[in-house]
Image (cartoon, rainbow, N blue to C red; front, side, top):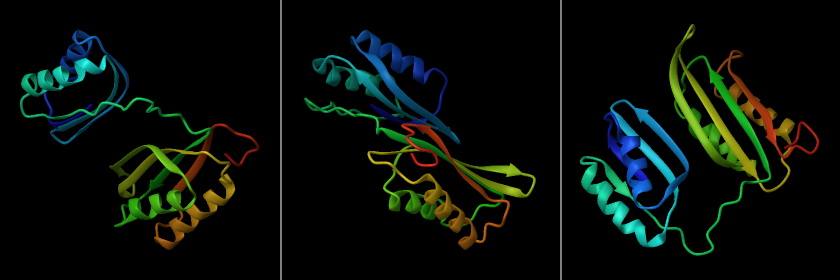
Length: 179
């Protein structure tokens, strides 16, 4: 389930109630408010015959919100990658293309982005760029090499020595600094 539209009080409660009333439950979710807009992504566990009725009810009861539902196909499943890490980026100033360059390093390293949060925040140095990614891989990744590539990114983007990108091993550690 994906919902996007103007924010208002009670959206999550309205959605959770409708899911419950259709015999379902929320298995996982991500929600974010950006300016006056609210976005929800939910993985639901519910009877397949109730999906269309839920979509219709949400579209009717949540005016102004775009509602999109997709039923998983038989046999669809998501398995967490065995190797995961958190990667943090704190740059004292924003730079055009920084997210593009950062995610290119992750993709080149064979890392899938499982979760990504970014924001511009007022820092002592000005408006800084903050990024947190949870990444995963099916194969062991050399954490030291990834850190080196991220450090090179900071230098090439002229981010200065105050820029900090760190790789924190989270799960599936075999022999740090690899993950």
